[in-house]
Length: 289
Image (cartoon, rainbow, N blue to C red; front, side, top):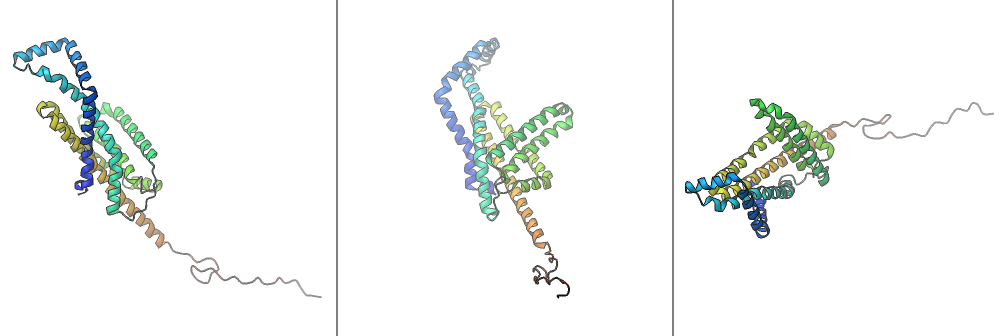
């Protein structure tokens, strides 16, 4: 339900705004030089001349006029998408965390166990480990069942490591975060795998935009928006789950502290009250003369 909140919808549309702005800047400064470069590359390829001749025979001679612009757009769009999504990643997660905390966990104490630099280092380290695991496991992908298991597991592990850390960075201490990771590792991993499979849906739309040239300018922005919605949904899922788990952990700790018995101090007359001290008796110094 949080995905249809006006603030969340605005965050999901942010990549499209950034993409439009980036495309406008690129078109103003680099469009014509990029067209000239791509046209020169196409003209230098002998196989392309034969392709143009064959297309003209089939009545597709107009393809040559828009092939260079299409290649420029296809090459520039992923750069804009990556920049847009990175910008949203930096802006969306804090805003979503603030939204959920205000509406559902207003009394949850913020212990700030993870700084921004520590979050960046954690994300980079987890990404490096995931890439190493992908490279090491690639020979196993030749076995048909494993190719459907290992990559989702690796990316699911990376997803839960990054998103769960960001969800807990503001509210949990380091010890609490480590305890929650230990308790809910399997649940977080399953959530990461599920969101990883959800992230494959925009790739299908993206591929459709590349295959069907007429729908390119509709499919690609749609794929970006769907991918952003998947990112927003995943972030909200981890935030809700992590903060709820943190609240339960603190309630358990508070209940355990309240149930701890108060032992009577040695020599006291009652539980929890110190014993009244009496003056020491004088030492027997023997008979006085």
